[in-house]
Image 1 (cartoon, helix red, strand yellow):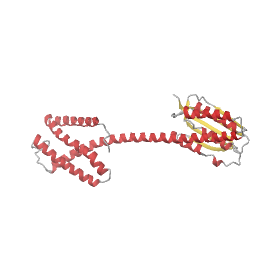
Image 2 (cartoon, rainbow, N blue to C red):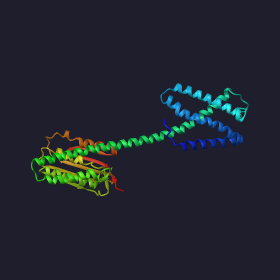
Image 3 (spheres, rainbow, N blue to C red):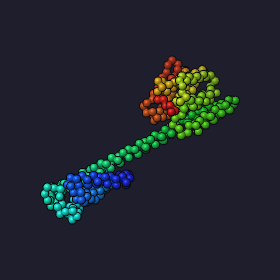
Image 4 (tube, rainbow, N blue to C red):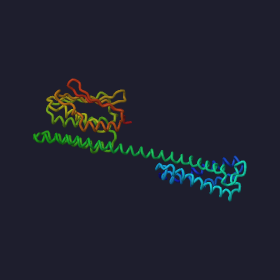
Amino acid sequence: MKFDIKLQNHLWFWAVYFMLNFLRWGAYFNNYQYSFKSNLIEFSLHIPLVYFNLFVLVPRYVLKSKYIKYTFSLILSLFFIYLVKTALTYYIISENIWPEANREYKPFEINHIVAVCIGELYVLAMASSVYLTLTWLKERERNRSLRENQFKIKLKYLENQIQPHFFFNTLNNLYALSLESSNKVPDVIIKLSKLMEYVLYDIKGTKFVKLIQEIEYIQNYIEIEKLRFQNVEVSINLESDIDDVEVPPLIFISLIENAFKHGGANNANLKIKVNCKIIDNKTLDFEVLNNFVHSQNLTVKKGIGLANTQKRLRLIYKNNYNLDYKTKFNYYIIRLQIPIKNED
């Protein structure tokens, strides 16, 4: 346990509590001078007892589940408080150590001991409850901030995994073209540089980017893949106005990669369709279809890129998204639905 609450807040608490007690008992006995002296003595004992309990007894015994030792120590503390309070009252205020009672009491009478201990326990419970509640609220906020930082670190880690994976695939494509001494190599290098510029600079440190930027990024990637595949037909259909829509960066590229990687294997005429639309002005529907050869083993479709995409989706949207995989006739279909985020 740490002294996390500012000192001025402790001072305000005790000052207000003292003032309320002073006015209450002063009005009750119609004797504000006695009330002031009595509360001055009591608060000079309340305050050390409260902090001794919070910063010595609780950490040493309660937090270590040593409840018997804590109870014994608290009883000794209360007995010490009783001795000091009784002595101060006797020598400073009145020889009648309990003037509030209906008769005169002498020290160590059971009723007086019980009354003093109950009063101290009341103050101890109230002050400790306030302090522990405020400490709990502050600790909850600290934990929330920690979870948020862990979330950002994990999300950044997944994004960093996606980028090398993508560039590794692209460099493999470039290498294959270079072996053929293809005149397409310069075009691939130029488009690859645009992709790297987008990843390294345009989306650096951003949580969301405009969907239109992601579409342009996807189109550049498709152009690179078209240079590698001889017979490929790709169509992108934007069925809604997406100018103001924002999405997490690089969230769709693994879907496109998957279509080329697995749809293009042993496929002489690869066809890829990308459909993007807004549903009820709430949901972005992004669908990728690619034809495949029926002899292909479709169980390999879920690679690193798709796995990381799913992890990122869970971190960003929790369960508020939908990612479906299915086959229909000779087409493999991936459909992603996420909540829409507008620029404003």
